[in-house]
Structures are given as structure tokens and as C-alpha cells.
Length: 503
Image 1 (cartoon, helix red, strand yellow):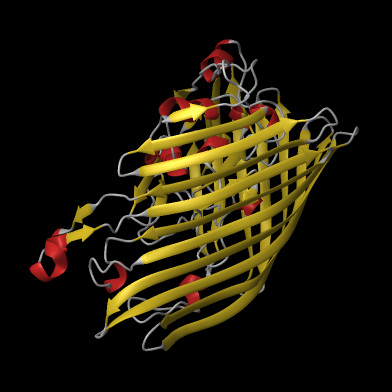
Image 2 (tube, rainbow, N blue to C red):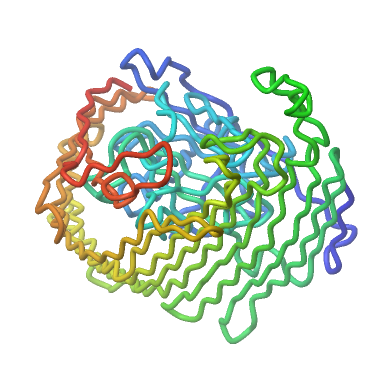
């Protein structure tokens, strides 16, 4: 891989890596806490500052990394009501991770799988087959990426964020529906992107790797003297993939002796931009991806040369944040998301026929959050959120001869409010408690609490945590039906989980 920096030639960035402080098995009911990387004391923004310390140096000097995603405001990682890991940009660069899935694979307690089409993440041993990451909430700078029909969280080459634009990743284990609502089931993963000041001009990269894989990226970022800060980046990737893949179950002469030939191609292009001025930040991202499928999934004809999926995903997010003199912070955001999917599957009914899936979703939403310090010992968070999923269209049909099996069009509205209090009982004992109520126009309401008692003595912190989370049934599970392999269930109710942890 060759990387050139147009405005940064001759400059070197220091490499620092956080170390795991406590490594306890998350599947045994004992959660994990790792202090990795360095996070500054600011809204979730860049950490690429020359004066930053490594996680190990920070601990030796008595400094503690800061996390934002556990409580929707910045707090020391040992005071967060969850088991948290932070992965920094320096760690990503040092270990050469090229996709977001590879970053998550490196985190203790997380694991990633790949089925030659999508990447999946598991937490604490849970990764249900056929689940499109719907039980993990993935955010970019606090913006929800899970779509409105599949609840899919993109973590592979279908992610709208290039891995080189990641400043840090915050992984919050355990249920977090008390702040984030649905999908925050096994955990919340928040990707914090770089800022213009981290680029300081133009930057580009070109990569060439095995399986005829090539990727190029161009980025420009700057912070101007008038306070305007911006970054814009675009990437393109093409991979032939493995030329021949052998599958024993198709090892017959009429199926090319089980060899899928040139069926592993992967192509994407993405674009990301962010601009900040004063209290406002506007950002957006887009990815278009096409992946051929060699596995003959959904009873398709093996090695047919036509099986493929197309994903187009984009969003816009406008954020406002202001800190008043009376220790009141007001945060608001407005956002729009669009997702389009098409799947081509060549099926032998007989006769051989191209079956196609189509999906289009559009949603808009807004969130308002107030954070106030009260009586010196309380830090109260009050928030509300509204989301209108005004298009959730699914269809499945045969191309020739034409036949329609599904043509489903739906919409829904979601309203929520949440309350949380961080109560400093003593200098070394904190009680963090809160709940969120969500109301869906489709099935009604659900309330989900969380509580944590956190005790710190010298360099040791113990956390006793309780939490409950839910995952709303999605339209794919409720209404999708195709020519083969699917049965809908419109009567599904929310799924729930309760956990008790000692960290």
C-alpha cells in the first residue's frame, strides 16, 4: 500500500496504543473494561492532537480516557455506566485495518463473520444467523446507521465511512435502550470521524492487494481563521475477489465440479463531508456498493454468474450544540436517511428465472437533549426524539416470465423521551440511573430502564450494572415473503433483554 500526503510530507505522527486494563470473559456475566486509546475532553470530535498521551501514559500520569457514547455526554471511562472500549485512529493505522469489520474484530468480546455478501458482528457470544446486525446499534458521530426495514448496521464494504476517516471508535457493551431506543440491544458502537484540522490540506491514498483489489481515496480538510472547519473525502474500491471458490455440496460435473468462477467481485464508491461553524455541524455520507454472491444462497443456481446485491445508502445530519454559562448544555439534531437495495437471484423453479428483491426506505427525524448540572452532585439529562419512517417499500418479483410475490408499502412514526441522572453520592461513589419510553404507531409503547452503581478506590473501579433493552420488530420480519425460503409474521412483538453485570 502506498500513501501520499500532499500537505503533510515529512511529518510524522506518533504511534500510541492503549492497553487492556481488565480482561474478564464477557460471556460469563462478568463484563469487560478496557482503557484503550486517548479521547480528549470535548464533544465527540478528533483525538489527533500532538499533545495527546497513549492509554498507558495516561494511566501512569493519572489521566483517564473520556467516552461520550455511554451517557450522551463526556465522562471519564471509569465513571461510565457500562463496559467500554475505545479504539483510536493510531491503533487502526498501526495494525492496518482496512474495513470497519476488521476494527471490530480486534475488540475483546466482539467477533465478526462474513458470508461472501455481508459482514456480521457478534458481542459476548451472540450473533444470530440471518440477523443483519439488528441487535447492535451503529452510529456515526451520534447519527443512527441502522435502516428502517432490515435494521441493518453496515460494517463491511457497505459502510458509508472510509476506515481512514475514523478518528476513534467507542464500543459500549450491554443494553442501552434507556438512551438510544431500539437496536441498542447487545451494545452501541459509535464511530467518531476526523475533522478538518486533522487533515490540514489535501491527502490521498492508493492501495493494491491480493485478489486484484485496488482502492483509491482523496480527502481535503481545513480549519479556517474565521472558525469554519470542513472535511470532504471520496473513495473507490474494486476487487475481483477469489477467482475460484470450491463448495463441496455442489461438486458435480453439471455444477462446474463445485467451483464458483469469478463470482466474488466487490465494488463500492463512497463520499463523506462535514462542516462546522459556531454551534452548528452539518455532515453527510453516501455509499454505493455491488457484491456478487458465489454461495448459491436462497436456492439459486450454482455458478450462474448473475447473483448479486446492490446497496445504496445515504444520510444528512444537522447538529446544534451550545453550552450556556449556567452549566446547561443544549443539543439538537435534524436528519434524513435513505436506503435502496436490490438483490438479483437466478432460481431454477424450473425454468431458470431471475428473481429480484427491491427495497426503498426514507426517514426523517429530530432529537433535542438538555444536560444540566444541579446542586453540584447531580448531572441530569432530559431528551426527546421523533422519527418518521415515511417510506418502507419492499417487493419481490420474477423478471421473465413476470410474477409478483410481494409489493408491500408501509410507514410508521416513533416518538420517545428519556431521563437520566448521574448522582455523585460521595467523591468515589456514583449512582447512574435513567429510563426511556418509546411509542410506535405500529405496536404501542415500551419503557426501558438502566442503573449503575460505580465505586472507585485509588486506581480500581467496580461497577454493578443493570439494564433492559428492546428491539422492535421490523417490516422485513413481519411482512417479507418471496418465491422461496421466507414466511412472514405480522404479529411479532418487541424483543427484550435484561442484564446484570459486575465490571
